[in-house]
Length: 388
Figure 1 (cartoon, one colour):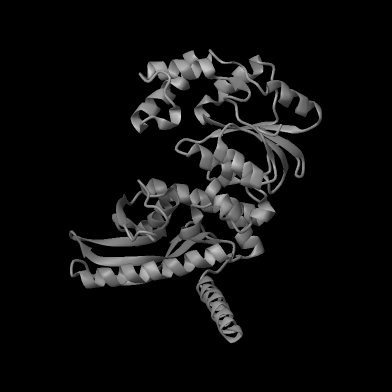
Figure 2 (tube, rainbow, N blue to C red; figure 1 turned 90 degrees about the vertical axis):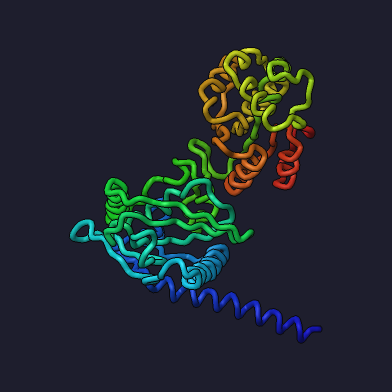
């Protein structure tokens, strides 16, 4: 048994080292020299790209896994297209370049160039993903736009491969000169930041692309989840608004009645009825029914003790101004507030926010009625609404 464990360890080590070596060989094709920028990166956070050029690229285990999966998917798509008898693969990994100024260019490699599809040559850019998107992702469109303009081709295809289920989805992308001009502006901005030795703003955070920060290998340097005005290491209480800082019971009763399900349990509502309920629940007319919540005096007390109050609310971002006005009328002040972005699942989004903040702060309490949220809070070492 001891000998077999040793063999298994050696195989694991060989795979890790081999993956890293393959990644290093691939990375060597990228000349990380200021003035040469890459279509596959240019749509991502400019601050991350700045760190790549000034600190060097850092392969995390997640990045190596994505790299390995991507190689396999690209190879499978190429083989499938060649075997289809429908299209002809003219070239793979074709190097292209777009000169923007005398000292700035975009340089990349086209995944697949098809000789003829419906009477025209077509570039295919392949992406492996954990979930098929409803529309092509902007940073992928930017990448493909560079290739289309470089090759003077009218149309390309972004092909997504769901690596968990094997499902595929393809999107047409038309060449756009305006898109290339926007991309060129990003490259020029990046070049200027690198030239000055000054990091760009935290673009991913400012534009709400928190997932990009979650996966970034420079996260410990950039510290994207430090909140403005709250220093690293400070103590904080995190609070929801509804059922904590405000009493929403009357609003909830009226919204259920207007949705045609008086007295029903919200979590048991069918999806269409639940959507209708929330339209009423978050309406301006019903928000005016709120009164002072059961924990508002408690958070006043905690703030007086020097603890920071951070509001992380499931209310949608579009209600920020209305909610802040409501809280001010109740006499509450706070240190920072975050509202749920459109399309985010509430519990998943909240628990991810807690995990991000605990990297920098002492989260002492989480005031939220949701049990799943409370479980996450306890795992992070915070007291919940049940213990304060």
